[in-house]
Each structure stands twice: as C-alpha cells, then as structure tokens.
Length: 254
Length: 183
Image (cartoon, rainbow over all chains, first blue to last red; front, side, top):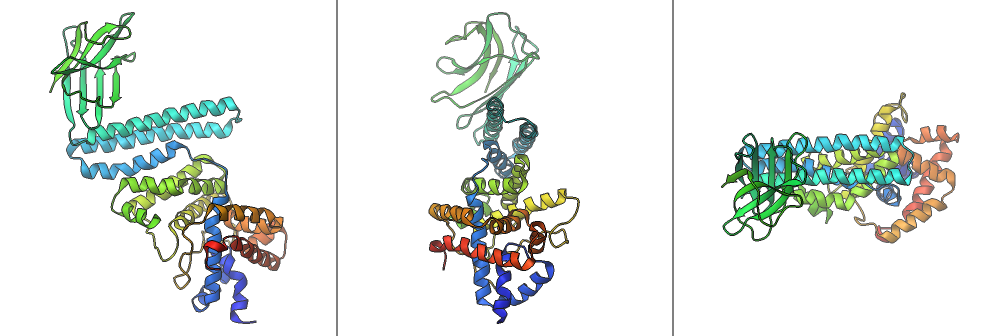
C-alpha cells in the first residue's frame, strides 16, 4: 500500500472535519506532499459547498435582511453625515434595530411554542410585516436625517394650543419627518391636518390623529413639485379638506 | 461576481452587503436552520456571519474557498459551536472545539464557483439514492460535526465500515457535480 492509499480514506473526512485529532495531525503532514489527496480534499469541499443548496426547508424573514442592512448602516451614516445628525441617526438605527429584534424574538419564540395552524401563521406574518414596516420607517428616518439638504423647522403652538410644539425635518430629496407633542384631544368629528405652506396654495401633507397623550409622528416621502416655505397644523372636519379652513394649532416657517 | 461584491464591501459599500445577502443569505439561513432546528437561533447565526463580513473581522482568502463556501463554512462552524455549547458533554474527538477543516495552503484552490441548478438536482437525487447508512454518515459529519469515531459509535458500526462508507458516499456525490468541476 502506498502512502497515498493509506491516507486516501481520510481525505474526505478531513474536509468534513470528521477526523480524530491524531488522524488529522497525521493527514495534515501528508497533505502538502500528495497531489491526489489534495484533489480528494478539494472534491469533498465541492460537495460540502453544494450540500446546503439541496436544503429546501426554511425561508429567512424579510426582517432579517433589514436587520443586517440596518446594523450595516450605522458606521456609514456616521462617516457621511455630520455633527449631531449623524449621532441621532446612529442612535436611532441602534434603538430601532434593537426594538424590532426584541419584538421579533418574542414572535419567533411564540412561533416555536405554538401549534402552527394557518391562522397563527397568518397572524405571525402580519406581525412580521408590521415589524418590517417599523424597520423601513427607521431606515427612512435615517435617510432623512442624514440627507445633505435636510432642514429643521420648529413649529410653535398657536393661541388655540399654546403648549403644543412640533418639529419638522424636511429634505426635498428624501422626505418629511414630522413630530408633534401636547396636541389637545380632538372633539368628535374633527381631525388635525398638516400642511405644506407654499408660495402658491397650501398642500395637505397628512391627517393628524394624535395618541392619547397628544403625540404624533409622521414619515412621508416628499411630494413632487412642492417647495414648502412653512409647515402648519390646523383643525378640520373629519376626513380633512383640500385647503385649510379651521384654526391654526401649530405653525413654523423656514 | 462574488469576489467583486466582497471587494466593494471592503470599501464600505453598503449596497454590496445587500447584494451578498441576496445571493447567499437564504442558503446560509437554511444551513444554520438545518443544524440548529431553531429559526431564531438560525437568524442570529446569519446575522453574525454577515456582520463579521461587513466589519471586516473575517477576511476572505480567494485562494482557499469560494465566497459561498466561505460563508457556509463560517455559518456551519458557528451553528455547530452553538449546538455543542448547549450539550452537557463534549462530543466528537472530545476536545469540545470545532475542527472544521479548510483547504490546506498546499492544497488545491476553490473549484467551480457556480453550481448549476441541474447539478443541485442531481446531487439531491444522488443523496436520496445513497443507502441510508451512507447518507447518515455524511449528514452526521456535515450537519452535526461528528467525527468518524463518534459516527461509528452512534450508528453501532465498526469504524472501518464508517470510513469506507464516507469515502464512497463522497465519491458518488462528487460525481454528480462533475460537469462543473475538474473531474
């Protein structure tokens, strides 16, 4: 039996990591001297690379890609944006990523524990797409905050709501990030409406329905052809109107 | 293609990370899931692998493996480590440490960088055609990280038999991939 024949049985197992320590050490001494064994190892490696391609079970959730992309964003955002905006973007990415991940783990744990009925799977898919929405929102937020053309506009409470305040980050290229706090509870049949105030007529940005504590947040793409000079929030009939008609609650100009 | 993507990731190109994930994320995930049997843990392994690539803490060596083989090797190693960490007693050669081999420096470089869909179908069929004991030997080694001795113990068969079966099985499987390789 030649040296090669002695070792040929070990080559595949070596590639698979299936040799005992002593055999592995002996094979590693032999390998550099034997082209045939090198070929056998390469052959086994090719099989190992192909084996996972035969697996058909399991589909990675979209949230996983988002999580990887979001964790990958942080250092890039920090290097291209400047000052506190970069810090805010980085922190937001971390916080949003962590939040989505914690929630996802809970969902995944419950998936394993639960019987996988169709209804449960559908509920799970709905939860996952909600999480994906949150991740997308975080990504959009970062894009806006890190945009070269972003501007910050403070909105002041008007006589109808002196303690209310709002803040808008506006980027013509990336969109609008708007938040408001201390908005008074809405009377029945009324809604707040956010406006882009332009040199021409105001353009509706969104209907604003604050939570129980008077807070509201909006992320929206920038509408084509709209160049705002100010942002305003008014109170309007339910469903909103094409032009403001009610009292101003918040107002802020560039 | 893969090598270009890796180079772009090295320059901080965020889009390239997405491209790499789109190319290989699903296979890496399925491998981790097959080893761990737990979707949440499989995701952690996938995230860990891609984050290490992004941060450059794992360097790709073109001479040693294809990009896909490199990603799969990292995922397999991490997933098997997790399984072992959960087990009360060390398995395999008793060292408790992962010993997944790579191509030795003196060995041949990576071969086919792309394995065609037809080749995968042939491989699937060949796996099904293998005698059960032969398939078990390959799967216990690849997915569970067992050594031949541990496999012999698990299957209650002589070590020599396991060695022969593993070699024969690898040859049969390799032959299904022949058109892309160098055989």
